[in-house]
Every structure is written in structure tokens, then in C-alpha cells.
Image 1 (cartoon, rainbow, N blue to C red):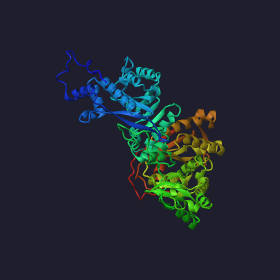
Image 2 (image 1 turned 90 degrees about the vertical axis):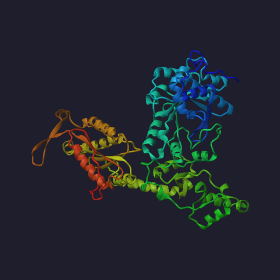
Image 3 (image 1 turned 120 degrees about the horizontal axis):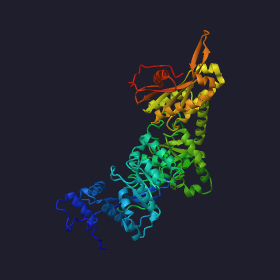
Image 4 (image 1 turned 45 degrees about the vertical axis):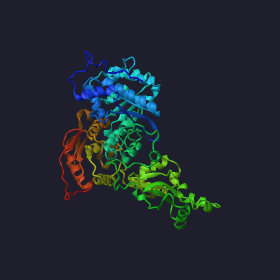
Length: 620
């Protein structure tokens, strides 16, 4: 097929190119005139099933040119006023090859917003190739990609153009959410079918609790919008598993498949099995259990493992020789493939002729190929949720415990129930009876856990001002109600996934904030308390701003209305060695907060070098 020269309308008057064009500019003309673009396709997969839902069409320039990089090619095209011509050619090349390869699912085609707006007014623009190739628009996703952060465009016009294409069956995606033009406002106004999380937030997400929390928050917003999320730049096993466990809809990246000129139409069987497994990824750094007393390490049983080709009769003898053996795990290269449970194995071999028929056959044919596999770093509560939400056999059978994907041992549902019961009894024993919040022992354990994890957090000591005279005037019952409502307000201002709230005793609370916006949360608590405390006082006392009592010497004293003071100390890794050191500094910071009239927050910005000589009583 002969292609019309796209440069005829670009040549200056006289029909010749300018003689002073640089080498790179001539290279751009050459790319357009001779279609020197190579299309590549990168699969986008369903993070639960492993099914390919589509491909992003990518472009590479001439391999023997500085314009091989698409970013350099597009940047130079913009500088020379050839953006529309280059992007139109990219679309044509990608669509033609997508149809030629007969790839399944959706095709994601990249367009910059300014070029897409030009396209709407063309009789037969770049997307005309889709009609020509008889590609269903419902399987084409227009991916808005910013190529120049400083480019200004008419947002209202872009929204009109996007609606124009959506009305014709095309889908819209926003690329690189969290960067550049892909702002929350753009997302809110455009209402795309897909949003892509920028690779910055996926890279090392397993090591960064803030990135993990960002993705969680994004998914909460998405839940009611009808939009679906794609995680870009998944490059490691740990990133893949954590993105899956966060319930991100779709993913793409080098760990799944690299861009290719002839991509596979299916994901590897190993990857599919991994994604469909019940293995939980280790939590991000800052959320891991370490020596956490609530971790599952205490459930670990060092059960024996066998290779997949081990004869069934050998596994049967292992059960015969050890009455306490619940399961044998089938392992290849350190990775568990499945498990053989005691009672199903014995039941099968108890039947006539089973020894003769199956004794010499490899044991992998008898194994449960979809056991529950969990990482050593998850908590007891996470494990109990998995078992409760999964198949009933997960409770009756053993579950497999791994570390970094490698086999460690097994655990049983019986031991899990026993441990949960012990934890509930322990929690009840150490909870504050008034608020049911964790008391001193779990508070101190949690502080030590954060210190051992080298976590960054903020310790906020919360105390009511002028509370004793309020108790004396209005009665202990009202005092208890004020303490309970204080605990409720503080709990509402905490993120249960990142923060820890404890009740030290009396009117004293402590919050260990992992949330990066802890200061805003503290100020929100002060505002809520200011409103909630008003009904506790009589109209007369509210008008006077306090009340008068007699002290032990019979002298009258004026007391201001009860307020809330919060002393905040930011804790960096290595700054303190135990909960006792933090309790001393937190108490000092609280005293500074109480010197400020009214509801107050005092932030202690002092740096504390590690001091092994610093000791103090426990929080009281």
C-alpha cells in the first residue's frame, strides 16, 4: 500500500526544507516520512486471575538514532511543532500491528491532551485508522499522557473532547496518577474508565508504608466511582504480591512481562498460580511484625517436606512412623507446591489395592495443589481473617508458612484458635475497664515494637486540664462520661491501620501516630473536643468560663472549663531505646502543652540523641 507523504503540508513555501535544520530536526522529518517507528506491546493483567485484559501500545524510534527513546522523540517533536504528526503516526503504527497480531482484549493508545483536542476537529484524524482496520472502539482505551508539564490547555475543552470520544464507544484512561497534570481535580472532572498509578508509588511499595497507604486511600476513593485502577511499574516479586493483596484491579510491569514486538497472549502458568494463591505478601516496612507477640511465628511447626517425585508409599510411611505428623509439604527448589494431609492420605491407602496401584507413583498427584500459604510476617488477626473468608478445609487442614516465598513449616487451625483465645484474654486483662482501650502493658509493648522496627512515629500524650475540680463539682459519673467521650474523639481521629491509641489511666491517653498527617489529626481532635465538652457544663458556668470551688483550706478558687492538651514528640529511628525513655519525654512534652491556655497542641521539635543512661518509670 502506498502511503501519502505526511510532510507535504509541513514544507516551507518553495517546497523545500529549510537549509539550516539541525541533524535532530532532519531526523524527526525522516521518522515521519519513512515511518521509522517500531511498535511494542506490554500486557496489562487482572491481579486476581492473572488474565490479560489488554495491552499498552508503546513506540520506539530508530535503533540507530538518539530518537530511539520515545520521550526524546516526543519532546523534540513538540519543540519543532510536529507533535500532531508524530502522535498520529504512532497511533497508526500501533493499531496496524495490534490488528495484525490479533491480540486479545483492550488496546491502550497514548495521546497527549493537546493533540487529542486537535484530533476532535479533524475529519479523519489518527483514530480514523481504527475504523479502517475494523477495530471495535469499545476495545480501545485512549490513555491521556502528559508530555510537557508546563503545557497549558483548556480543561473545559478537554472534558468536552473526552466526552466526545466516550460517546463513540472509546474508553478513557489517565496516566501517571499522582504526577503532573493527572491531579485529583482532573480525575474528578474527567471521570475516566481507568486511572494508572504512577510507577513512583509502586516502586519499593513493599518497603514503604506511606506508599502503601497512598494506594489504599486511592482505592477507597475509587470504590464508588466506577473507575478501575492499574498499577504501573511492577518490577519485583514483593511489589507484585503486595499490589495484589491491596486489591488493585490491574497491573503491568517488567516483573509481569516486558514490552515486546510479539507479546504472549497468556501469562505464565507459574505467575497465574502465584496470583491465585492465598499467599499474603509481607507487609511494607514500618508495618511488619518483627518480634511482634501477635505474629504467627509461635504457630510454626517444622513439618517435613518431600520432592514432587517422592513415591506415595514413602510419604505414607512418614505418617505411620509419626502419629503427631499432620502434613507433609511438597517442595521444589525451596518453594512449596502443595501439601499432603494425614487423614486424606491414610483414608485413600486404607482402601483395597491402593498400595499396589498408587504406592510407586509420585506424591504430587496426591497433594492438595491449592493449600493456604501465608508469610511468617503476617499477624494472627490477618491469618484468622484468611481462614474465615476462605474454604472450610483451611481450618481442618494445616496451612503452610513461608518466608520470602521459601518454605519454613506449617501451622494448624487448632493452634490458631488457642492463640486467639489467649490474645483475647490478655487484651481483656490489660484493657482499661472504662474505655476498653489498651492499657499500660500493651502500650509499652507497642512502643517497644515500633522502636525495634526502626519506625518513624509521633508519640502524643493527651491529658484533660482542670479535670479534678470538674469531677468534684459535677460528680464522678459525669467525669467518667467525659473520659469516655475523650477516648471516642481520639479514636475517630486515628487511622486504625497506622495509628495506636491507648488509655494510660484516669484522664491520660497516648496516641502513637504512624499517619504522616498526625498534626492535622491532633488539631481535629481538639476542635471536636471543644464542641463535645460544652454540654457537660451548666449555662451559668459556660457564661463565666468556669466555676468556683473550695480547696482543703476552705479557700475559694476559680477553675476554668475543662480543656484538652496534647504534647507531641516526633520519634526517629535510633532516638530512643525503650518505652521508658519515651514515657519520660512524653510526660515532659505534655507539661509544656498544659502551660498553653485552652485546648492546645505543643510540638516538641528537640532532637534526642540515643542515651542508654536515660531511665524513667513506666507510663502511669
